[in-house]
Amino acid sequence: MEKPIVVFGYGPVGQAVAEAVIRQGRSVSIAQRTPPARPLAGAAFKPCDVLDAEAVRNAVAGASQIVMTVGFPYLGRVWKTAWPRAMTNLVEACAAQRVRMVFADNLYMYGPQAAPLREDMALTDYGVKPAARAEVTRIWKTACDAGRVRVAALRAPDFYGPGVSLSHIGNVAFGALARGKAASLLIPPDTPHAFAYVPDIARAIATLLDASDDAFGQAWHVPCAPLRTPRQILAVGAAAIGRKLRIRSLPLWLLPAAGFVSPFLREVAEMRFTFDRPYDVDSRKFGSRFWNDATPFEVGSPAAARSFLAQV
Image (cartoon, rainbow, N blue to C red; front, top):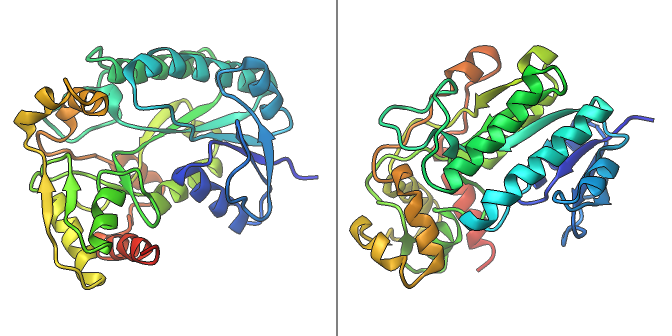
C-alpha cells in the first residue's frame, strides 16, 4: 500500500497542496488539531497538534513525505515560542523516521532589504516575528547540514487566490469589491508588491515533493507574476466582475499610532518594511531548475474576484 503524503495544516495552502497531490493519484493525509470543516474527498485525517512532540511523531509515522503548512496566530509573543517548538518537533520526527519535509515558508527571515529578495541573503535578528522565522530556519538547516534530515523550504511573499480570505488583497479587498464596497488596504496601494498565487505555491510544493534529494537542505523562492501595485492587481479583478475600483488605505505614518489601540495593527506595524518600499522576490533559482511560468495577474485576479462574487 502506498504511503501517504502527510500535509500538516489545512488552510488555503494546505488545501491546495492536498488537492494537487490527489489529482496526481497519490495518497494524502491531513494532520491538524481538528478535522477539516470541509473534508477533501480522498484525504484521510490524522489528529495532531504540532506543538506536541508525541503527536507529531505519530502523524509522521508511515508517511512517504510531509508538507508543513501550519500557521499560528499573528502575534509575536506566540511566534517566538511556537514556531521553534513546532519545527523542532517536525525535524526530530522526520529525522527519526527518515521522512523528507517540504516547508511552506515566508520571507520574514530576511528582514528589511532594499533589493529583490534572494535565498542567499543573511538571516535577520530584526523584530520579533522576523527573528522567530530566522530561528526556525536555523533549526532545520542545522539538522540538514548535519545529515540528520532532508528539508526543502519553499518561501513565498503575501499570497492570494480564489477563496483566500486572509490576505492583504483577500476578503478586505477582492471580497469588499464583490460586495460593492471599497477595498480596504493596510498596505500602500501604489507601491509595487509581490504576491504569490496559491495554486502556484501548491504546484511548487508538488514539484519539490517529486524532486531528488539534492533539492533538499536549502530554500527556494516560489515564482511570482511580474511586480505590480495592489491598485493594478485589484483593478484587473474589479474589471472582471464589473465592479468600480474604489480603495481606502491607511497612511503608513498612522500605522505605529494605530498600533496603540489595535493589537493586530501593532503586529502589522512591525512588518511595515515589507510594504513601505517596493517588495520583490527573485525566484531565478527555482525557475532555472524547475519552472518559472507563474500565473499572471490577468488570470489570478479575475479568479480571485469571481470566487468572492460567488459568495455574495
